[in-house]
Length: 135
Image (cartoon, rainbow, N blue to C red; front, side, top):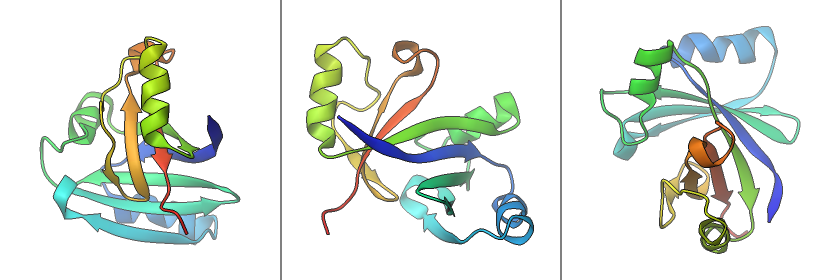
């Protein structure tokens, strides 16, 4: 079911400041997206085959709860995402195995269709599943 780690997500207060750590200091490549529909600015940073995703909410009460997370925790590691071939099938299998899903149906994410499993069902780790667009 899981193909690989797609990304590790970090919630940040200041995307530009955090991004400079990875691009200027570590010399890594990145791409920045403005996801206005979700009230987020996102940067994907390439580290080998895995991405680091920096997430900055652009308003309070964003749909994914990053603003709330930052207020409660000051930012930091938010979730891990795995790439899957078929996110709908993944949701079905997880639900059949009593994994509580935040998303009963996939939603559009920054890099394809996504769905989250609640951390209460995954050993305290908020877990995202990503189906990348077919090439």
